[in-house]
Amino acid sequence: MIPKYRIQCVGGGEMIPDMNALSCPGGHDSLLRTEYCRRRLHLAPYTGIFRYLCWLPVTRPLLPSGGPVTFAADGLARELGLSRLFISFSGYSPEHHAALATGSFKELEALPTMQRLSELGGRIPVIASAGNTGRAFAGISAQYKKPVVVVVPECAIPGLWTTTPAQDVFLVAVKGDYTDAIAVSNMLTAVPGCVPEGGAKNVARRDGMGTVMLDAAVTIDRLPDHYFQAVGSGTGAIAAWEAALRLIGDGRFGTALPRLHLAQNKPFTPLVSAWQQRRRVIDPDLDMPDASNAVQAVMSPVLTNRKPPYAIAGGLYDTLCATDGCMYAVSNDEGRAAAQILRDTEGIDPDPAAAVATAALMQAAETGAVGRDDLILLNITGGGYDRIREDYTLYPFEASATVTPDEPCDRLVAELKKWVAHYG
Ligand SMILES: *Cc1c(COP(=O)(O)O)cnc(C)c1O
Image (cartoon, rainbow, N blue to C red; front, side, top):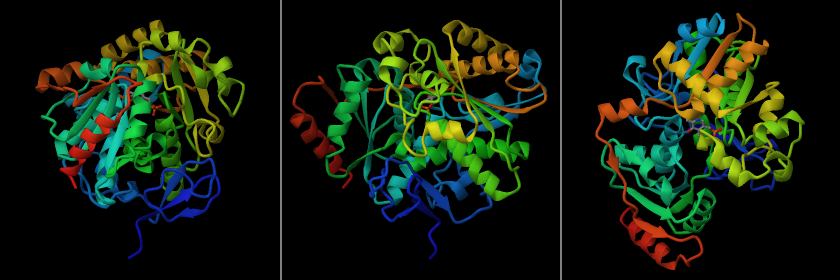
C-alpha cells in the first residue's frame, strides 16, 4: 500500500522514516513537514475538520467533530471600509454553525493529534499549557475517551473545564508559572507509554490548524490575498503558510501566497521586535525586555510564548519571509475596542487574542496596508465562551496531583505510571 503521506525535514529536504519523530534525526535545526501523496484536495463526506481528512496525517476521522467555519463578514467590512472580508471562526456560536465546544482553534490541533497517536500505537501525550491548549486536549479526551496528561500552573485550573465529564485526564497542577509547568511536563514524558506532544513540532497539530486556510479557500473558491491572525507561538501562522503552499500545488485556488499579517499584544511583542529588524534570532534583551511584567500586562495571555519556533528552519521567520509578512503590535485598548466592534457587527464574542487580530486588521485598513477591494481572511481563533456556558453544563477539574517546581518528582512519576498502566 502506498502511504498516505511522508515526513520531510524542511531544512535538509530528506525524508524521515520515523513517523513519531518530532525533530530531524540528521541534526538539522528544522521543523518536519508532512508531504501528502494527493496533490489535489479531495473533500471527505464529513462535517467539521475531517472534511479535510485528505491533508490530515490520520487515516480515520473522529466523529462527530467541529471545525473552522468561513463566512463573509459584511458588517465588519462596512465598518472598516473593506469590500471583500471573510472571517474564519474557530469557536462556539450556533448562529454561525461554529461548534468547537472548547472555544478555540486549539481544538483543531487536539483532534488530529489525539487521533494520530491512537493510530500510531496509543502512546499518551503529555501537554503543558497555560490555558486554551489544555482545555482543548482535555475536551477531546473527554469526548472520545482517549487518555491525556495535562500539566498546568495551579492558577490555570479554573479555566479548565469540559462539556462532558472527563475520565481519562491525568491533570497535574504546578505551584508556579507556565515555565515551571513545562519543566514538570518534560520529566513526565520519560514515563513509559507517554510522549511529548511536541507543540509546533508536531505535524498533526500544524495540519489541524491548516484546515482554517483549506476551509477558507474551499468556501471562497480561491486563496485570500491577506491573512490576519494573533500569534503567540506562531504555530497557527506556520500552518496557514503550509496549507497555502498545498493549495497552490493543487492548482485550483490561485498561484500567489496570501500575505500574513500577524499580531501580538503590547507590551509583550518579541516577534514584532525581531521581525521589524529582519533578525532571524530573538534576542531576549532587545525583544522582550522586562518580560515578566510585560506578560502580566497583556489582555491575551495566550500570546505570551517566550520560546516561539521562530528561527528554526520552516518556522515563523521563514513563514514571514516567504509571505512578505507584516507584524503588528496591538494595545489592550485597541483590542477591547476591536472586540466591541466585532460583537456589534458580527455577533461574535471573541477570545481576547481574536480581538487583537481584529485590531491589527483595523490598523491595516487605516494605513492602507490592505487595499479596499483585496480579499482578506481574518482568523477569529476563539470565542463564544459565554454561549458555551449557557448551552452546556461545564464540568470543572480537580488536579490528580499538585506539585511544587523544585520538589523531587518520584512520587508523581510513580502515580503516573500506575495511571498509565490502566491503558496498557
Ligand atoms: C493559542 C492561541 C493563539 C495563538 O496561536 P499560536 O499558534 O500559538 O500562535 C491565538 N488565539 C487563540 C484563541 C489561541 O488559543
